[in-house]
Amino acid sequence: KKSTISEAVNQWLIQTLTNWIKPTTKQRLILSTITLPTIPSTITTTTTTTSRPSVRLPLWSALLVAYEKGNEVLYNGMKYRCVTSHRSYAGAEPGLLTWALWRKIQ
Image 1 (tube, rainbow, N blue to C red):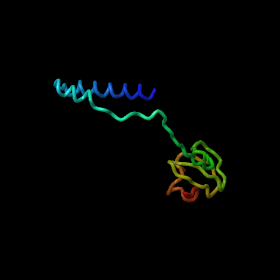
Image 2: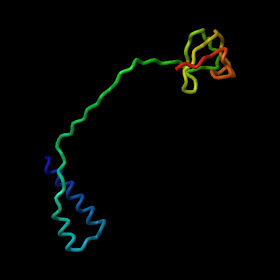
Image 3: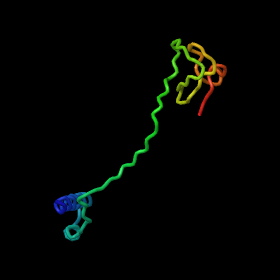
Image 4: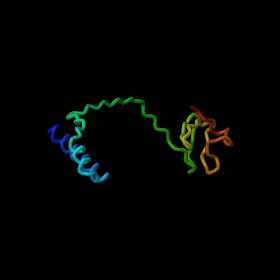
């Protein structure tokens, strides 16, 4: 089977080269004598996975959610911890201006 694949690839490459450069008769003879490397019949792959504990933080919501001191949320790709228990509303998003409600955590 290995030789069949190699022969097919060699034939394809020779035809591609032949059509691309429009060789003369002499060049065709040279192209037909080119020996291309064979393709291995087996390919080994190794996959390494690293497992991390899956921590799913809820996304911050402006829909009057009751947040308790210590709750953590995700907002704009950053993690925040609730500093003071409160209900959320539009305009109280975690960030620099809401320092009394939220603290950015690493």
